[in-house]
Image (cartoon, rainbow, N blue to C red; front, side, top):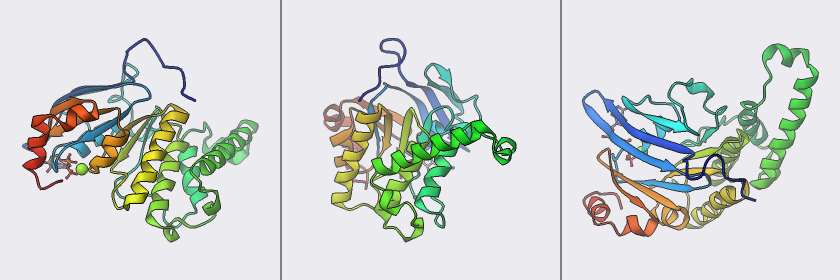
Length: 265
Ligand SMILES: Nc1ncnc2c1ncn2[C@@H]1O[C@H](COP(=O)(O)OP(=O)(O)OP(=O)(O)O)[C@@H](O)[C@H]1O
Ligand SMILES: [Mg+2]
């Protein structure tokens, strides 16, 4: 079920405001602004070097913008510590799977879930009641997510032994275990075959529909973006080239020109 819309009518869940990033002399992002509404799947596209990953890394607090602001429910995320990103509701996956290869699926997902418990080392080691209760709730949450992503059969399998497509699902499970408001996906279709991309698309939509999670999707696979995104933002050379429905952006002359001029698609 979709959760009730948060906040005031029309106020964005996430607002990117005039964000610029400069590396040395290179302007990787130049005054980017757009909004994400709650429950939206937003596709971020653009040719190689357009600035997609740079923006993604600003949203996940890996990079600090040189200018501008990023607001989550009206509050700047840029003043909050980067390592606590999961606590304030931003979950992410990595372009190249970044799991603990020698841990089981279960343990990898527990790492995600742990970022949401309020235990600490002292109360953990004393096994205080609230830790035990928190642990029980966490185990249930992890088990629910494994079931939801059809990973229960692999719960005790070491991640490195799983096919790439399954590993990507484990990463998704780990991100979901942080109970994000926004899920940031960096090229989730990379390295997947045609059928796996199709399944992934369904899964992303299902996560949004069932859990009301807002999704930002950086993706080169145009078919996937066009089939699941509600809204698309196209970047080129660090600037916003176009924004609108998938059809609007796909038919935008500037977007077509940018893609024809690149080796990308
Ligand atoms: N850490 C960095 N240091 C210096 N320059 C960088 C860095 N990261 C990105 N850039 C530059 O910033 C620009 C935007 O790069 P970015 O990686 O964000 O593009 P992208 O849209 O993700 O491209 P791709 O589709 O190839 O992944 C490029 O000119 C790139 O060379
Ligand atoms: Mg990139």
